[in-house]
Length: 219
Image 1: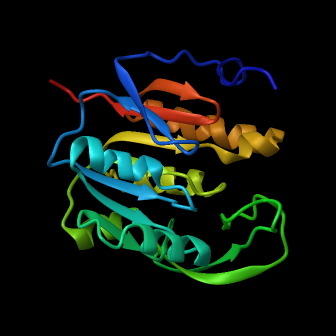
Image 2: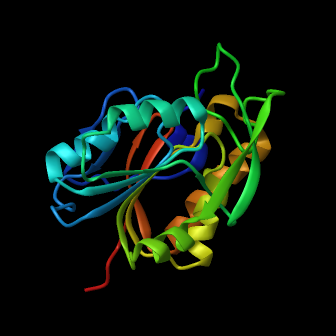
């Protein structure tokens, strides 16, 4: 596949950055987060190395979300003794309610998909919340970092952020559909990227299908 930058005709504006986490890691600006920062990690799977390194490096509060049964068991077991890791067993989506999540086959992995990205047949019903609703419930007027790794549901979440004018400084997102790219999916990615750019974000890093956006804050 051609380089993602060429496909989307974009030029990242690289700044001083650091990579956190293992295989499911992301690159973020080096000096933006601090001890009082609030980070939301949407999608855990069975690799929360990025989430945990956020805590280790910056001593931030992490609020994590994943409705997948295997992920719930793994994350609760792994973070039982970490006081500033707060886990919720529902999905972040475009509405407060319920949705069907299509479950992976053994050869795909642990992560389910509301949009049925992997075209599987088995599904479960999950509880969903809109990001702005969760922020309000938690008393957060702003999020310093938002990680989105949700197997194709990222476009709905990004649109909800824009519609609700959620204040988020850093957005790291994996555009999972790059692995199954069609013309329609490419257009969805372009729409999400351009929507964030129009709302004052810049692209500061691209690693594979992982994008790092940082919101320009007026002086």
